Length: 376
RNA sequence: GGACGGGUGGCGGAGCGGCCAAUCGCAUCAGACUGUAAAUCUGACGGACUUUGUCCUUCGUAGGUUCAAAUCCUACCCCGUCCA
Image (tube, rainbow, N blue to C red; front, side, top):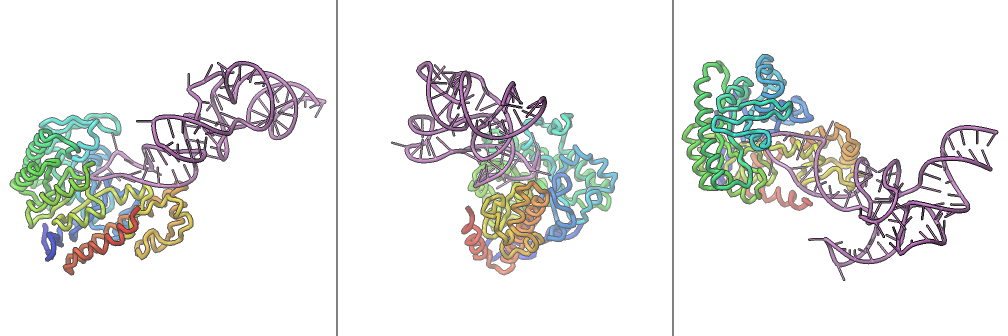
């Protein structure tokens, strides 16, 4: 599914193409997060318009509501949500972390109490595979435990062992169910855990690779640990992953992290930052972060980001968006989200070009000269 | 002219002798947000300073009672409702 088309001469960065049943996805790629089958506030058409080819949705949430059977009967997730490009589904492993007060982990799986109506649901590696196959996502993720930070070595080790075991069960279920997926080309990614412990990360990586997946993800990142620790994990673990498979840093990240991790050979990212922060009033710009709520933008008639060619910056001013945001107008949330997603895609394009042109390091420095220069 | 009710920090609105520089909401000023239970959350919000504390000036105005008043009393000035 994955082909590398260019390797950086200066770093471990590379460019590639992921081919799924719903088209080609150039890497490095940043996936917007569409948990409920929608990137909050923006439409499929808008995502396409700004150049999105892949986003991440969530099997756990879609299972609870509206339900996999309903989606399946609608003709699958793509058709249901009106998206004919690629979709990656997260398994619910993150919800093991984020909804930790509503679940109980056993060897068998995770028993969740629905945050919607309190009802009980058992998620097992097998059921989560079936679920994602039923949804028909292009790339499925193994069911894992996203380990909280900080975790003791013992907890991290036990959890890592469990995630490995679950990965095997996921693979088995995936392989054995293959006939049911008839013409559907679905791929399955394994997830490396191990918390902040490099030896556990290494062991997790090697044993996950042994199971053999279509791609490999680093999970349990950006869950509250200091940035230098995240960096240490990625720098040390990414090189252990197979060169010829896509590498995915789950839940990451900031513009800083995109540069840093692509430099270390990561190909795929996803993060709620552009969408959530956008809804909370923050615009990402090449000059740094802009909190559009701030008084200083009330009479700033320039675009969110000077020189940005996105559908927002070409049409709307900071002042107006500031006004909309303060007035609680929904349009502000949409405009900020759309701009931020465009920013991330543009940033990825910039990085991609620098890989092509073998000037990654100088382009990175140039980016941060301006980005840092106006940050805070 | 009379009878009630009321005047509290930018606004609304609690408090009705000490625990009040004064609950709360809004507004304002900032900050956070990383595989989304998030259009959310946090902090500041009379002033000054040696800022987990100290001091100064506040609850219509002016007096008074009291060890102590936004809270009680008196007068006055405003505002609202009703009666003439």
